[in-house]
Image (cartoon, rainbow, N blue to C red; front, side):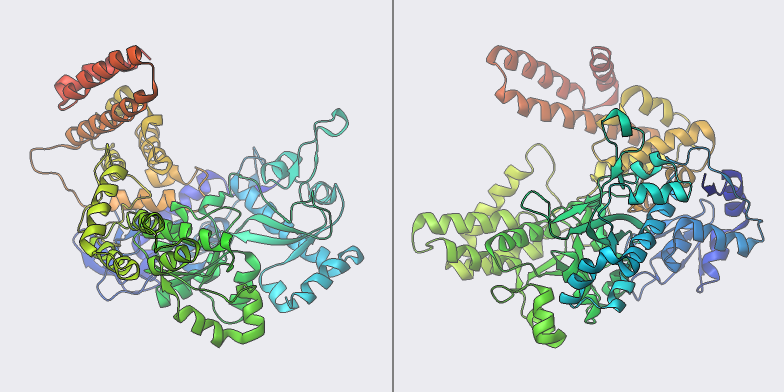
Length: 610
């Protein structure tokens, strides 16, 4: 059974390591009111926006959004995992680092991290030592992935056996249930082997997937041989550590270089990223077995102001590049798309032409709208009215994703020039599209500036505001009963905000700090800890005659109004009689949900009737 650091020891380590002292030992802090501030070590800036709050024992940067507790700081600054951070802080404070047997090894994240790291080393040894890995070594040699590259990215080999990892786990005394929880083992349904199952990865070249702290959290396995029924790539399933919508391949290496240039290079696959890094272009990342998501864009937004997308130059790659571009626009990033010669990908291009030619290609990358209009114009006859309307509509749909008025104006101007259309006409159509897109909710501010408000599209602003009030639950005990009575947590749409509210409620009962509680939640991207620190560091926006309870009531009313508005829109597809009756009831409710005195009974009625 694996050894773990007991909670009482972690509490002692945290108590003995004041965050201001720890951060101040790395760089100078200046007193700012009751806290401290400094130039952020995680992104380039001239005006200090990095704040340390000794009262709450948190840090937060209002520029890049980095934040957390003393453990988070060591993990992010030193680039280490939680256990290593705890050991460093224990040594610093002179706390004896006691270990104990893990009570539930299959469910603890530190055990899962350890398994992943040690299995990655096991796969690496298999690649280097097994005779059966000769085909894998030959493939890597053919792809010019040298031993040095393999060592840097811990490329390995999963033997062509059903129980290689199972036998390894048995030897090292890891519970088969923990291996299954890591996604390394699949439970077999037959009675004979139902307790252990079989290895998920067999006869595959293995690429470890790491999180932002450099911890192995999953794997991607490329098939060797096989037939048409064999998937070329198999990735780890969703686990407590691995959430593919939040993982960017090689970000743990790339992020420091992205901070330097403020621009990330976005590739499609792991080998493309590996080749970029091996060639000296260390700002390259890729999604992991999924399309790019809001979470991916939000994570990159911490480090970059712009992205250059370089996907395969076929139709699927072109479409995927535009889709990714709209996701990055949503986050307020500037987006350019590079065009490779036919039949090339970043890996092959770099091998044939070198990094200088590749940098030149990236330098010629087009703004997303110019690229999209050019690609679509090659598919549509823009000389015809129908073709022109299709291309213009597609371009405007992309532009609606930008939250920044200046960026939208420039994109519209570019589209108008390329399509030979009046700017005013496209602006009129864009306004209509944006109204339709944000129907039932407020459109983003017209003067929004990328990075000016960290509460971006990934987290609904009103739910973040609720979190900002809930973190004051220790000083305002009425907040707990208010939320528990009037706001079922499943009505909070954003899972990160939902966890922060849940942590605040747990904090009120247990007396533990919110940052301490959220660390127990599964969150491989560390976004939960970051946002928890952000809302705790947020300035007080309340006027003198408004309390946190008053503000929370208004936000609860807003969330309920949003639910009713969504339901009313859905009623358009319902039967006429049912539609009329419920729609009239919703209209009555919405009229009463404008103030707490009238709205609270409506909520009680709805919850009582549920």
